[in-house]
Length: 331
Image 1: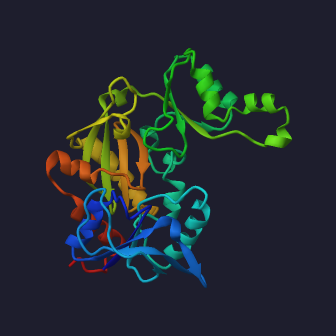
Image 2: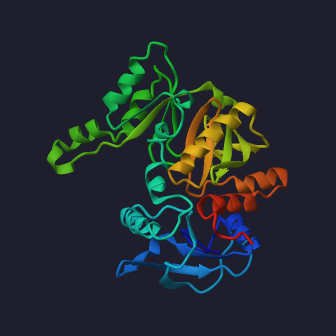
């Protein structure tokens, strides 16, 4: 089998486990630069590098970069987002290619599910945190104000990552209003300052307001799902003096298996995700809640290896191939 993995750069590759896993299974693998996609007569081309040897984590994939056709692969895996200025066109072009070649994660799922907006499409209702999405300060603040139980809240971007701009709010906190105003674009303040809405146009930004659940204080679990099956998991503890467990924000790993209830929930979600074209995902849970889907370079494989010494990469790749390309030999 011949696989193509889309990345941002060949200079510092954080998909080494996946790349090396394909090689260990005796498949051919190339990497392509996500922001280099072009077309010739509606056939797709990109800058690619052929992987000839094992890759070191965060190392370089050495070799000549050549701009050539990417129409002759058996499987394509998008592991990085295109630049925001190019994203709309890149996704449209990749969608055209996905009509001809299987993608590990469908372009539709990468665009519409790899965010905080649409968890309710996949996750059972009883496993969803109370959530409001909007771009109006008045709307989101009204949800805090009308709650008579004085709940705590989290506000975050709809399409952010790595714990960026994730704020903890209390109903009567002195910074609650200003944070919500900022997260929704400071539209009123800008309008007053400029005094001409026709000049500046709309300034609103979407944000997610979510009830803070005490379960996260015990930590979260990152569950690796491939081909509709749970392959592995690890735990993440909150960073000291922080409400976030993101490793980039000081959170820490711990070894953790799923209990029977968590396994049941993840099995349900894994099946539903595969039905909409998701072949690989890092699922964040704090039982009984599903918190997030992570489809673009979600990590987890290297973390499990670090803590347990077990490399689940081959199981991940084989499960994906069975689900997406069950007619292709694994040898």
